Image (cartoon, rainbow, N blue to C red; front, side):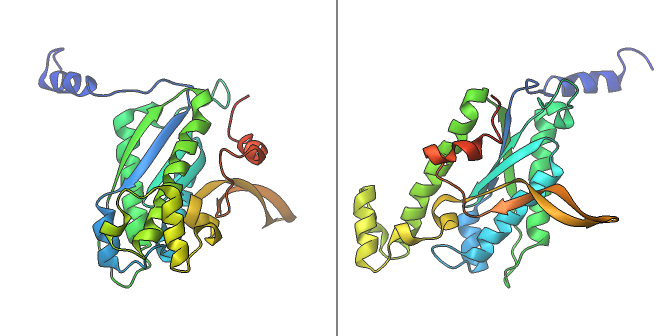
Length: 246
């Protein structure tokens, strides 16, 4: 084949868009449902918190962690999931798909769309779709990223509760304390909601005992945690230590 053949030219065009993220820095992959405001309505989700939907999103996060090389932690709230992916465990650790941006985001979105539709537990089944983005960030910002997403989840949680009790016009320009009081007046104390309703959920590896050929053995397995801490709490320091580099 000649050096300047048609195939060579086309591959050169392709390579100009083949971005690779920097190796050995933490990578965040964030997944979002496409037009899920409409999807949840059509599927018959219960307001303000549908646990069938929450369980499906948690199961999806678990599936993604099991299928993304280097996944360490997934955090989910509403229709989004953020996954911490590492390739700095040791000097020989490979990066998932060599951290090729187009590969990472397209495969994650494909995995999510496949699993979610295959495991749709609602009676009314409408196709769901996801998009994904991926980026690197400094080690010292990893925790801050997840704090940001959890604070967003907390704000959304109170808003969702209030929206299920009041008309839109009644809630405009209301501050946090006002929304809490309004929910209280309707007999709903936001503070008494389940943790997963207020702050979301996580997926990470934990030890489980399984039956081996020669008896019980301990294995690390990705499990869902529906009672996660407040990420800014001093009490969460030990919890965070399993995901952050010293």
